[in-house]
Length: 212
Image 1 (cartoon, rainbow, N blue to C red):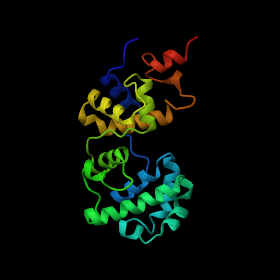
Image 2: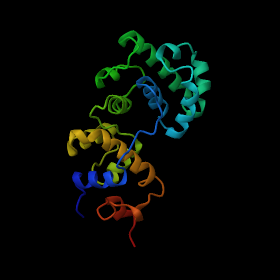
Image 3: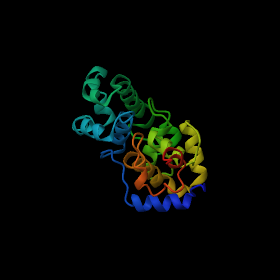
Image 4: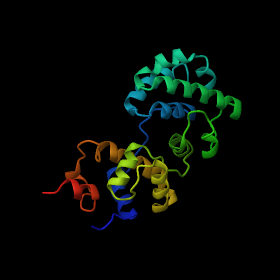
């Protein structure tokens, strides 16, 4: 079976998702950063419900720090893992004030110095808010990349580096969003829509899971 090349993937993803956008709702870089932290193992839809209320009063680091951890936990409870998320959001907010004057830095390395901000979160913020070239590997991107034979790893960092090597740098930001949408709506973890997939003729997952 021939592998799918990067050009074909970009062309087909452009056809499927020509004007793809981040589904998290935000009005500032800080709001995006908080929303991405909340989105870990939680749907964007649920995060948007929570942040729609949260950001009415607590949409800056200074305002967020007026909350106790227990108060913030109550407000974000439905996002899951609320204890660690509340702790990280408050620590991150303090770091922003102490290290960067309350402003979210436009730099991948500096973003990762913030409490609770890992590589994936930093990549999302850098790409979405600052239009930087980055590929954030979440569960959707990791799953799709393996199924299409682009990578063979369960390690997000190895997946990210492999995708960066395969695709042109100016494609990374859009590609990340397209792969997320493709994994969310077509190449689902459970019951993927293989029969209607544009990649099925060269997809390794389809070849091994749809034998007659």
